[in-house]
Image (cartoon, rainbow, N blue to C red; front, side):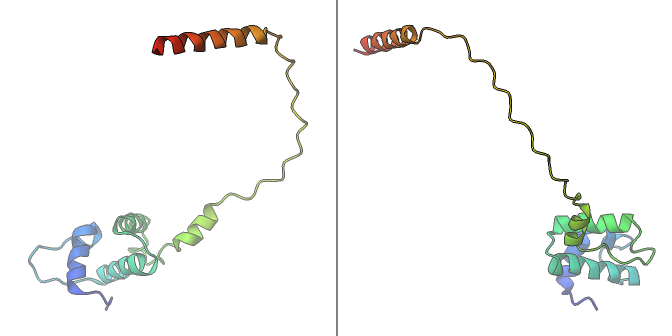
Length: 130
């Protein structure tokens, strides 16, 4: 019905707790209408919407928690539509701000003296290497 191979269903039963609820291991696999609906949704999430198994697991659990399978509600809208709905409205254009006030220049210091000290440090370091 869901066009999924049996070995894939067995794997999904190990990954998705919603499919393994109420099933005995080793017993004949009988799926309820709800199970078929869940299998179809897993297939959509993995194959059509491109979710990973972990992502599909989270999404499916959220949909089940919201009651989408038990109340007969439609599945959640595609992720792209959800993201569009979550985006905030564009912000209003900002008014031009006045240019920043420049701080007064720092007090002048003896640049030549600093340069002499740096040259002396370099000379001392070079003498230590030789």
